[in-house]
Every structure is written in structure tokens, then in C-alpha cells.
Image 1 (spheres, rainbow, N blue to C red):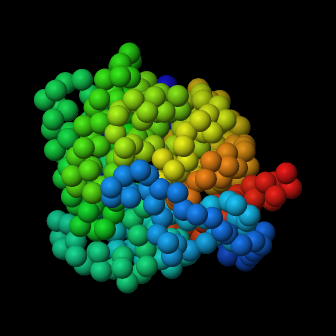
Image 2 (cartoon, one colour):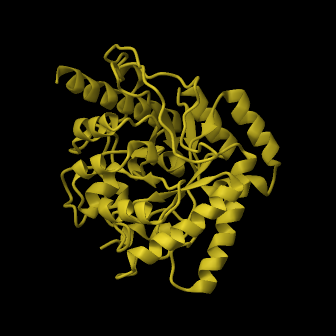
Length: 353
């Protein structure tokens, strides 16, 4: 059922393709919508109850046109999976993100480690600072959740190393998916909560918060209720979750469930969309499309987040091979505009109500 998602077992592999994504007509800059619904963003930022304030946006964070009234500001991020097929170096990824108007980047740990083998991280930190780009989060795959104590201890050491690398770059968050347990059924959620607590303690020591990530294809932590349970029962003030439009759908949860999760615990929300076909059971990661190009109820999703006080990053995460064949700048620009259009649409619906 999830053959096309086995890439998650290794951060250096690309997803295989059992379902061919819909063809996408290339979009030129002239075809992009040039403006959004106007408005003035104003709201108090809401952060995690943590000593390191891992979830709190900076006071001078840019406000997003189109979000009005009491809605929080949102910022835009590019997860580098979206341009993974173009095989850019990390400095090229940062340059692309900065030049196309994003506020932040969400790189993969494997790419950062490859960079660190040949150049000092201080050079990358300088580029980030000079570009005004932050690392909203990073994608790692430490097997912190597995039953085997030995493997779990090794995974915590890997997570510590990943977090220390990110701390050198000024990053404060990393994804914590159920890697290593995606094919395991019947794992006790209370034990998972204990293991997440241990991972959060490593995060507290390094200053980098692990965000419990939803994987809809997984047999573990595939539903919003499971994510909320583990975050609530882990007994740690730094607990945070990382939902995703596609993964909520793939896992079978209702999007209304987002309203049951405190929005200040969502620092990064993965933005994408999915087509009406193939079916939910058969749809694969590579079938994700730009926000607004599918059938996801984005107005409902975004307004649920806004109603809860969301003030984090909307991070574009796609694995569509059709997009990988296009120029990276075109994909980045199109994706950013699509996210802004989605926010503008949700805001218009919100203001009408």
C-alpha cells in the first residue's frame, strides 16, 4: 500500500513512484496572480511554553498581506523536498529561497551533512544571516520511536548530533516522524509518549525542539488523535506537533480535528494539496500538488488554524516528479504564490463570516 513511500527509511533516497502524478502545465511569472486580498496582519504572537521559546515567531517577523483582523501573521517556508529532483546544493537552495521571496527554508539533514563534509557550517550560517533567511525546521529520520532499546539509544545519539548541527546554524526545530515504526502495528501510545519525552529532553539540552510529525501512510502516528495523545501524555512542556494537509487526508483523519490541537503547539504546518484520484487508499506521496490545484478544503484547514491562533510557518512540502522536471525557480515562485492565494482565499471566507 505504501511502496512509494519507502524513501522515508533513508534521508538520502528519493521516493519511488507507483502512481504517476498528473501532468502539470508549466507556469510563467506572467501567469501568476500578482496580488492578494489586501489587509493588515495584526496579532499577538503565540509560542510554546518552553524555556527556549522554540515556537515563538520573532517580534519583527514580516506580516502577511491578506490576513486581517485578529488573525495571526503567517510566514512562508520552502521544504527542499519540493525541489529535490533539481539536486541543488544547500547554498543554492538558500539563494533560491531568498530570491523568490520566502521567509525560511526547511532543509533535509542529509543535505546539511553532505555540505558539512566539504565546508564549514559557519559559512552556511553567514549566508543565512546575510540573506535574511531562517531555518524554520529540518527533516531528520532518527528512529527514536522503535521498541529495541539499543537501536533507540543509538537513535537518540543520532538525534542529538542532528540537533547540534542545526543549533550551529541557529535553527530551533526538527521534524520527529515515526521513522522505523511506519510498518509496526500495535505500538502502545503511552510508551511512544515516554519515548517522545526522552527525545524532547535531548531537544531541551541542545536548544532544538523535535516536532512530532504525522505520517498518514504509517501504521503508527498516522492519525491526528494519535499525534495529540502522544503530545499530551508525554509530560513535557516543549511538546510540539507537525501536521500536513496530505498526511491528514492519507491517514483518514477529519480536518476538523486540527481544532482540537492548541495552535501554539504547531510551529510549522506542511502545505500541499491532493487530487481527487487516485483514491485515498492508493494515493502516494508523489501525487501531492500545489495548494489550490487539488481538492483539499484549504479554506477550512487554514481558518481552523487561524481560529486557534496559528502564527507559524506554512512550509511547502511536495514530492511531485513533474515539478522536479521544471526549473527550480519556477517551482518555488509558483508554490509561494499558490500558498499566498490559499491564505487570501481563506481570509476572504473568514471575513465574510
